[in-house]
Image 1 (cartoon, rainbow over the protein chains, first blue to last red):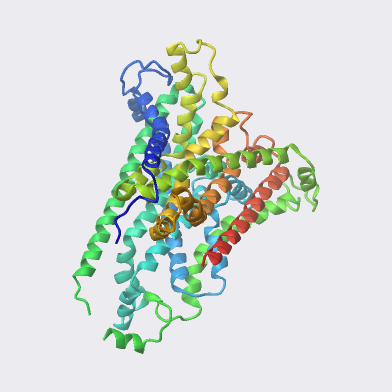
Image 2 (tube, chains in turn red, yellow; image 1 turned 180 degrees about the vertical axis):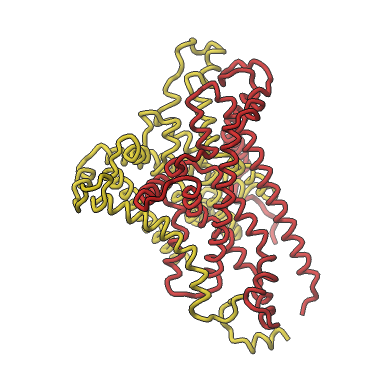
Length: 281
Length: 305
């Protein structure tokens, strides 16, 4: 092997330019968020320079605002139910897509994944018209129905690769030893794909918790958290409070997702360790 | 042992815990719930929208009756059609700028950054965890007449108080800037994936054969990363055509997009007939675009083997 004379991917100057560009993009991505954080602690009802001083008023006001806390609870309800349904339905679909050769598979997967590219506004309108025609009064349950549609493709896209990587011989061994399909799923498949199920659930949860376009058309009297935030924007003096809550939610979702990712890695590493510990045949 | 077992079992596709393929019940039972859910809460509503758009259904009872008038009005140079083209133009700008901005980042991460690349990628993707609403709100706070930028300009005396730079907020510019902000991380990801799977030996071969870095990039790296670029383009261009919330928050009159017109027809204007036409048109455009892109991607895959 000849010593690498030059890096063909990038020259020294090129590397410098790319470093700078990377830094510029990071500044672009993080400055707005950092500014929001700063203004949530600023002692002024308007987000303007110069800064006046440090206060946690906005955060305290949030704790005292019952409507606001109520909307967080509403969103949590919608998100926990809709993501559970989406994971369940996505799991059913993923199993068939990975393990079965059926007629019309391409059509089925196209349908199941299509909400990924459908403009939310079009789906929101279609559901509004549909529920109106079906005389279903809109509310929490209709938001759930809409959010499940939006979440299903994400849960499928997370579960399919996991099922594909699963060693089917484990399942087949279980069947050969006399276990039924359900028993095998419960004892073998489910524990193995549990980390993927959890990440699918979390992704669907965050998507639903954050979703506003579909919710705003079929919410009825219900006020989800994003809808509440949006309604408060009309009152500029409430802005610091809105920012404060948003910061809390941001911190919470970062914690949850990072925690889940770490848990997933630990679980997978443990699994790999167990597999490696098995003597090779 | 293992080898024998494989001989006994016919070499069929892996079925896993379901066991041998048994046509019928189990498969149907599994596939039916998710498919039915999408049929009921997605396909049927879309069909309904179409029926509304040709006036087979109508909001006010008694006025229905098949008619293509609304479609003719829309396609015959209505202001909504102009708005549609304006949205397409804005989406194109957003997609192209995002890709141009994100490509060097993806290249840097995949081919230059070596060990730290996943950490750096996470840094780029992390803003995704922040609520969509919050990310747009941030720009409203920054760009408003009383916002961060203008108050900073007043404070430093660059701009006289009471004379803010007003085009910063509620304009096409704001919508485009905000959408780029939202989509840049999203764009970087598929390009990164395609560049990361690039076989570096191809670049070394190009260098051995006397190619300069620029030539190697143009003839090897760029063509091989095109599927990632196309995927990125699809995932920005298509959703932004129907963008509704960003223009609503930061667009003002100048930044209005097609999605806002649709919402308005079902809201204030209460013209479901017209709104259904706009809505179904948008869905049809997206479906056609997806068809075209999907074909383009498969042709490329076949062509590159």
